[in-house]
Image (cartoon, rainbow, N blue to C red):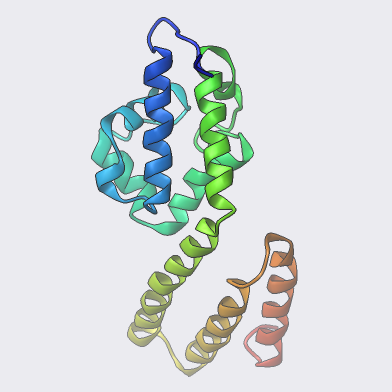
Length: 181
């Protein structure tokens, strides 16, 4: 017997397939070839995500930048809709499949997915920031960039609880370097 129930617009078997597609997609670290039309349709029809015009627009919105992938994933870790800020997507006819997707996300996130995404974002952000400093900056800006880069490296190894300590330490380092009043 399936852990899912048939509803008017989705059979228990279809719900199982959505969860399997979701699992495969997360395990692949958001590889586009595993972002199926079935998964896309479920996300925007039953998980409180906006369609973003089509499957490619949705993918570009949430998976081109790792920080947006974290936003996407957080919906399944916290239960709060990323875009609409409610939890109603976890009730009603699709509660069983959506809660199963949350379970999958929690299991995969425990294996370091968020840390991996943060590191990937860091590797994207730092060259961008350095290029902007080179283009528009001055020596003080370059010193600030070096301090931020060193601090961000430390932060990627921190837990969420360490975020406030990180921010406080960063401000203190910038003050000591004469970059902040």
